Length: 234
Image (cartoon, rainbow, N blue to C red; front, side, top):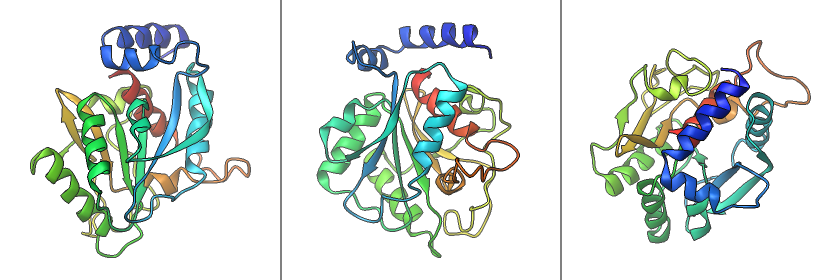
């Protein structure tokens, strides 16, 4: 996809997504189309993979014409300001147990058209993050809301082309079952993915030191670009 075609597609997508358009248009006069928002939550450990946002931001600037805020934004999930973010990231490897304000904002954000990328940091031995997060999602959206994403889901072709989710070097214990999975999970609202749920620890994979060029031969943040572009244009 070249720049001209992408800009045309991006403009069309915004025109057909009233809620997202209102969010971006509400920033009239603002300098950015996209800003990276990490969500804090009271339980567990949310502050992981600290270089990851900067690396994802760098890739978005390099590969896309988006006007990208170069700074990571950190907001409490209980803070109503998170409801205006175009994209949110939530991670950790311990217990996830939302308080009432966190649960209320998470549901409102997703049901209103928001997008949350949730990544299991994979450093526990019993799948605690995964089990507790899935319980939270079942309590909010119902026990069958979380589903496997098919390999031809639009997420995998939203910018770069992937044949399903890329594997990582850190997928140690996934959903507590010691299996490397060939799928991601998600929750869709009105046909649009609102929660993308990974057990692959993409955060660690994308946390390499950009300046010291500790990258694999292929830029592993390209899938992060797909996630962001899906969030903005689907």
